[in-house]
Amino acid sequence: MYKIFISLIFLQISLFAEVEKVVILGSGPAGLSAGIFCGQANLSPLIIEGEPCSGQLELVANIENFPGFPGGISGEELIGRLYEQAIGFGARYDTSHLTKVDLSIRPFCLYLDNGTLVQTETLIIALGTKKRWLGLPSEEFFKFKGVYASASCHGELFIDKNVAVAGGGDAALEEALILAELAKNVTLIHRSGSFNAAPYLIERVLNHPKIDIILDSAIDEILDVSKGLLTGVSIQNLRNKEKSILPCDGLFVSVGREVNTAYFKEQLQMNEQGYLMIQAPTSLTSIPGVFAAGDVTDMPYRKAITASAYGSIAAFDVINFLKKQENNK
Ligand SMILES: Cc1cc2nc3c(=O)[nH]c(=O)nc-3n(C[C@H](O)[C@H](O)[C@H](O)COP(=O)(O)OP(=O)(O)OC[C@H]3O[C@@H](n4cnc5c(N)ncnc54)[C@H](O)[C@@H]3O)c2cc1C
Image (cartoon, rainbow, N blue to C red; front, top):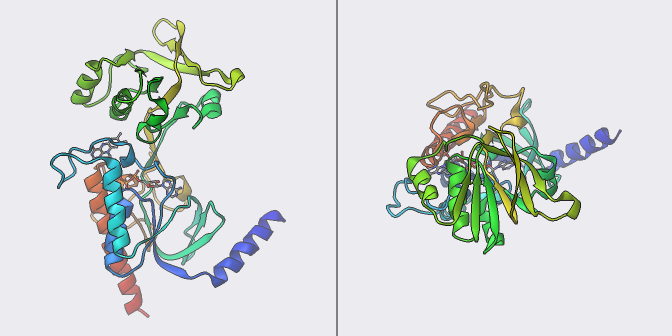
């Protein structure tokens, strides 16, 4: 009964709501570059932004390899510039989060967490990837109340405090280095016996006076739920199974990423890892009118510049699609 009522409300909204020409899901380099090119073509694209600080680039303190910035540029600044450029071309932003999508009929239906239904002729999916968490009940308890995912966004809460970082890849080492500029001490905890990161990052971490390293170990609990305050983490050495407690004031989790495509399961073709299959070199997916760009696709190039490039390709594909549709009328 409740579901019928909700569907009727959405149906009523959809009868009166304007249908967008193009909606872009995601505001990373792929989504924003698509926004720039769609905007320049006077399509007035609507960009659904998602959560602040959830894009990958916003985590990066200094991007050293984005063409045009010889001294490097912070992820936050690069995203800010792309954002401004897209607005300049008439892109519009909605800070909501996508919760459900129906691609079975055109216009496509997008359901947002603020209760709105957005309908669109074409869709560019640029949702990138999201952080993986440890999956502990105590982590759930302390999430965003002591346990965080991004040092760039929440590191300032730990000025002169002790923090732990879980993980051993590029991202974890970057997080540890950012935090070491703010915190009293940083302990990097990694499951394996060695880091799986760029040599220059490993060298910086190993030589940093404020970073301690615990290898071959996993966090099995975040303390202390009974006090409602994060006081430390319980660690198990995976070789000798011994447990110990590391007192700390906060924990940053950086243990990998997974692709943001759950919304499209059984609607769009994806590979075994969940990456959306596109008909390279175009951005066409398995449904006409739906395009994908950046890290969400099955293309192996996962960099800001390749995401940006694919965003522009998706915009051109949208422009051509709408033109053909107009000509067929
Ligand atoms: C630690 C780290 C360091 C890196 N360093 C570099 C580097 O030095 N140089 C480089 O070129 N690349 C680097 N990368 C890779 C680069 O960040 C990615 O390749 C690039 O950001 C991919 O862009 P994207 O637009 O496809 O996805 P993302 O940047 O992940 O953007 C995805 C967007 O989707 C939004 N979103 C997610 N879910 C929803 C939802 N349900 N509803 C609405 N919106 C949603 C997010 O808010 C975000 O805006 C790094 C990545 C990491 C993690």
